[in-house]
Image (cartoon, rainbow, N blue to C red):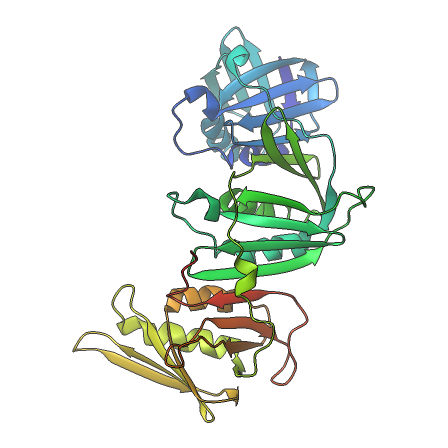
Length: 382
């Protein structure tokens, strides 16, 4: 196999192919990148039996063929090559990579032992790339990082007619966002659900965020439930998480009369300042009153802090204690100048319910997006 390619294009393609590979794997062969030189260019692929990545680039191919090489090593080399065309050739089990005055010789891995890359042919629908990337960033932060309960380490995608909902929870908060969905010719497909690992979805959002439109394919074949995202000659596939996602939508109230509106940046900065004296895992006390919201932190005997910022309160004065980082995650996902924090009720009048965080276009007008973030430290789903 022999080809020549643009350095930047080749480096970006290798970087994309290895991005989703695990840092450590029990099978060394799964750390490889498969490079196939065809008459029209190069196809670079990676696969670890759960996630795959594949991209096509233009190259001057002198001799077609396939080779498997250590992915992260090739990515490191490609990112540091001088500004010149990359020449790539193989001879027996040796791979030669040269660029300008730099030259590397690598050992190839056995192609015949590499698993087949998953192929998903049926398109389920299309989503606007920028909206999808923004929605993933807003929602995925609420997914659990505890592998003990795999079902909540993912983001639930729910397709109904012309809408795609993204839902995530870690039992202490729930995040939901809806965006447009173009079903294409699959108008009679009905409701589609897919539970996608949050880490994979976050990488898809970052990678495809400026791609215009992303094609999404969800398929069940050979006892494998897969989802594929494709844009700009790049494809990422992922196995879906098996299990029933908790019915967290029922936790959202239909209407709330008691809420406060304040400047988002002011609340973020005040929270970051006051939390400095807190011990780990401690909560901040928020008192929402007619003259503003007061944040209070009681740390050790040597350190306490408080701060009051402007707020408009609708309803009665309310006091809640919230974990600052969880609150900051929700506030950072509200892409608006103002934020509304609404207070739900419980059967126990002395025990506040979860707080609902939504965007606010102005002090008086609610936001136009559909982002919702429900938070309370003792929000445990049974």
